[in-house]
Length: 441
Image 1 (spheres, rainbow, N blue to C red):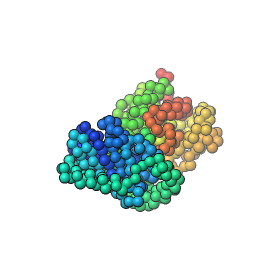
Image 2: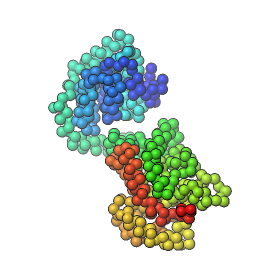
Image 3: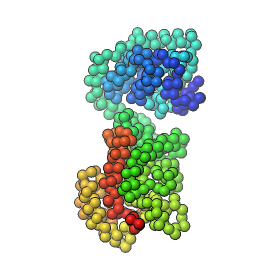
Image 4: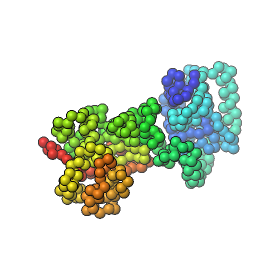
C-alpha cells in the first residue's frame, strides 16, 4: 500500500497508520529529522499502547532539529530510547511496528509535521515477510552499532549550541525565502519565523490566507478554511453568553456567524481573513434595512459596524470594524451633511478613545493612509483625521494586533478571555460611532 497526498489508499494518514496497530509491543524508528509534532505522535503511541521507553527505539541524525534540540532530547528521553548517529550522514525514514502483525513504513517522510501532513511525500506501507523483516532488523542493528545513546552530557551539549543555532536559523530563513521560489515571494513569514508548536493556530492556518492561497479553490485549502472556522467558532462558544450582555449579537443566521470562508463575489473572490462578528441586534438590522429590495446578503448584517476577532495572514486581531469597502451603513450616517453626526458625537468618541490609550490600538483606513495610533496621536485630532481620510471604497477599523506567537494565542481559553476583555473595552466606543436608533427599544 502506498501513501501520498496526505492519505493512504485506505484513506488513513500516517499518524493513523502508526496508531492503528493492534497489540503493539515494540517500535523502531529511523528518521533524519523530528519536530514537536513528531514528539507528540510518539507520546500518543506510547499512551495508547501503554509502551515503556524500552519498547520504543529512535534513531536520529545529528542535525535532527535546530529548534531547541536539547529540550527536545529531554522530552524524547522520557518517551523512548534515543540514539544519534554522530559523524554519519544519516537520512533514513523507516518505521517498524511489531504487534499482532508487523507493519513496515518506509519512504520519504521524516517524523515531522511536514513529513506527516504538509509535504508532498511518498511512502510504502506493508506487512513484511519473515525474510524482509530479517533485513529490516539488520538495518536497525547497523544503526545501533554506529549510534550514540543520548545521555545528560549529550543533552547539555545540544543545549549549549542553541545561541549558535539561532544565528544559523536566521541565515537559513533568509536563504529559504530566496530559494522557495517566485510563488512565495510575498509571504509575510515562513514556518521557522515563529515557534507555534504550543499555539492554537499553526503556521498552516496563517498560510491559508497568504496571497498565493487567498483566491484558491483547491480542496486542501478549503479544508484548512473549514478547520480555521471551527477553531474560531470554538472560541465563540466560550464567550457568547458574555457578548450578549453587551447588547450585541451575531448574525441572525447561524451559518453566517463567521465571515465567509470561500472565495465569492462578496469577498472579491479572495479569503484574506476569517472573523467572528458581533453587532446590532436582529430587530435593529431588520428595521434599518426595511424596504430594501436587495437581499440580506447585499444590505445585511455585514454592512453595519461590528466588534470582531479575526485571523489573517500576519496574525490575529480584535477590532471595531466600522466600515466594509462599499455601502457601509454607519460610515454613511457619520459622513452625511459634511460629517455632521461625527462632530455631534465628537465629545463621546474622544472620551471613549482616551480610555483605550495605552493598549496598542490603531485605526486603519485601507487607502494608504498612515494609521491613527491612539497611543501616540492626539485624540482630539481623530475626528478631523477621520473626515480627511475615511471614504467609500476602503475598509475602516480600529484594531489591536497580536503576532502569531503571542502567548495569548496559546489555546481557545486564553483567546476567549482576551477577546471578551477587549470587546468589552471597545463596546462603548462602538455605540458612540454606529447608528443604533432602536438599541433600547
